[in-house]
Length: 283
Figure 1 (tube, rainbow, N blue to C red):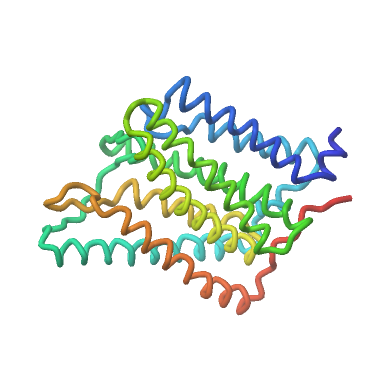
Figure 2 (tube, helix red, strand yellow; figure 1 turned 120 degrees about the vertical axis):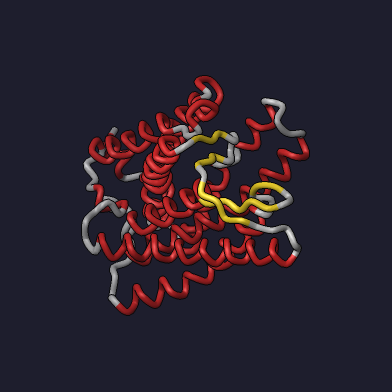
C-alpha cells in the first residue's frame, strides 16, 4: 500500500486533503472552536502532524516538500521581508484613501480574528500569532508542500501552481458557507463574500507557490503566509466610517503588489542561484 501511494503522490495528496478537511469540518461545525478561540488551531496542528506522519509512512524525506534547513535564514528573510513590504504598501494606500475622504484614519494595534469577530488583549494576540504559525505550517505543508511537487510529476510549473492554488481557494470557502448556515449572512452575501475570498486566496496561493518553487523551500511561503495573516490580525485602521471598512481595498492592493513581487523573487533566486523545487520522487 505505501509503495503504491508513494508512486502516486497526487492521489496521496488528495487523501491527505480529505482527512484534513474532516478535521476542519469537525473543528468549525461541531466543536466550533473558532467561535471560542478565534483560531482552529487544533485541526491545523493535527493536520500538520498528519502530513509529517504520512511522509514518514511512505518513506519520503520532508526535504521533498521543502522542509529542510538549506538556505533557511535567507528563505525566511525573502518570504517575510517581501510580505512586510507588500502589506506596508497596502496599508499605506488604504490610509491614503481614507485620509483623502476626510475619514480621519488612525492605525491601531489590536488582536482581532475577522472571520468570527473574536477579539481580545495581549494574551489573545499571542494566541493568534501562535495560531498563524500552525496555520501556515499546515496549509503550506499541504498545498505548497504536498500538492505542488506532486502536480509537478505530470505538469509544468505554472499549471501545477494554478491547480494547487485553486484547491487552496476552495479550501477557504468553508467560511462563507458557515456564515450562511449560521444566519450571519444572506445567501447572496455569502456568495459574494465567497467569490472575493476565493479570488484573494487563489492569488495568494499562486504567489506562495512561486516562492516555494523558486527557492525549493517551504519556509519561504510559510513566513510570507504568517506575516500576511498576522498583520491583518494585529494591525487595523480605525476611521469615522468604522474599523477596517476598506479591508477589501487593502487585500486587492496586497494581491497586485504581491504578484508584482514575483519579479523580485525571480531576480533574487537567479542572483543567488537558489535551487528550484523538484517533482515528487517516483520510484
